[in-house]
Image 1 (cartoon, rainbow, N blue to C red):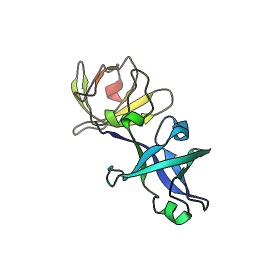
Image 2: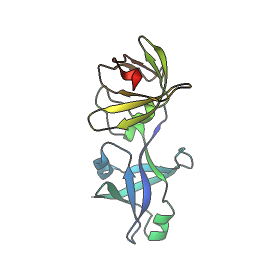
Image 3: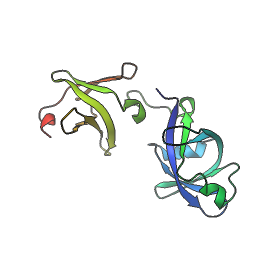
Image 4: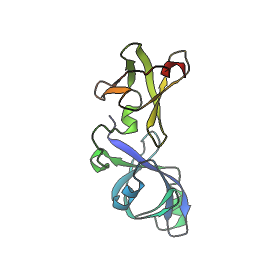
Length: 172
């Protein structure tokens, strides 16, 4: 598992004092209020630059963030497009039976009857429950709800998710 977790993407500047608009990539955008040490990285988590956030404000679905040393619009513009990452020890603690999406992506999904279904490619967050998108060899993607009746075991170390498909899920 990767030690850095992406929590937001800088999508633009805000005003003239170096603040940036951040699109949160976390279920808990309020976590930016307690953000201190973080890293600016590319999507592939290369070119890691240590940063310190000094303030956070909230506007609609974005966070307005201020970094130490970014004091004007030009400097803020230079970090547009970068991702904000934290180390796992600085991540928000998850409740039991909850996982970071980045840890689930790439896991092999195995049904108790059908066998290997494919690889978890994406997690759609619908509100009621998440939906796992399973890439299948030579077939259309399979969508399965992330509910206890379907998801039977998640083994992150082994990179395996065991499921029990409810009637009709293969037909969707």
